[in-house]
Length: 366
Image 1: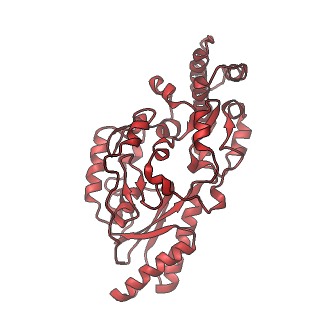
Image 2: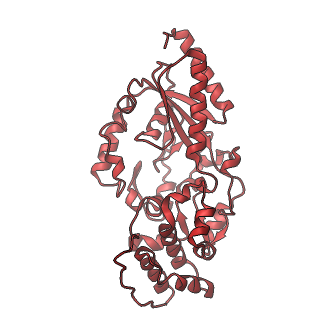
Image 3: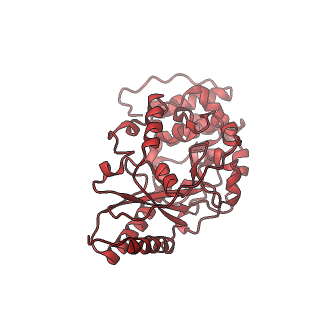
């Protein structure tokens, strides 16, 4: 890459922001790669064991907090945010109807990874057309990257007490993405935090997973339990999960800054297959072929069918007793997966039903 003057770099940075907005990003900013404070925070979090089964958080040495070790030559990170909240999904109504399945709003539409990575790659190519070949690599929650730390460093917002990124004019209902670059672009200043004395997110968390301001014990977090955890959900946490079967948005719902959140402009993020308003029974009765068909191209697909049934069984265990609920649970009481059976039996017991214990299948893969 040819040497670029400071004035040209300043102009290029503005062009990158303009191009990014034209590609559908709500905001583009630029950070340096010095994340020492965030690296120390990560090490304390790991030492406390808050990552649970997310072993990948401790892999890769310091690559997660040192971008130049992950992508050699990186001196700046272009950060991007894209709003995802779909309009008119009656979030509170669904949460308050215990017969409905609540699915986190970020996953109602198509999987965001491909869409955002494609747009970031397009942005990288536009830069290349302007200045010639340079080193860059796009990331969207797909590698050891401290995306919230980089976003905070670049001024996209601040990390709130619930550990999500917050922006005064956009709340927190947005995705993040990054481009690591070897161009010494001028960096943007960070913004001050504005959580103040508010503890609404900590108080509302159904499982009390926010154990202190800015400290999340993932092992208690419903998003972790329903998405990352592969085995049984700990029994003491099942009842507090309520009808949340894939992720949890409670801490975002109560955050005062989300009064300023804006609805997504991306058609791909709009709900598909009416997943914003489906009953637990209806989803639990999907066979595997239906599950695979309805979740094609969705982030929901990543957990697989047995864990989908596991999560829904917990929701049904917390639902009001009805003939439909009990009948649906009995239909899976002898499911070939021990993981599914165990949660179905727990749910049946919650409704006063006493299933016979099923002997574990030695060929069961869970």
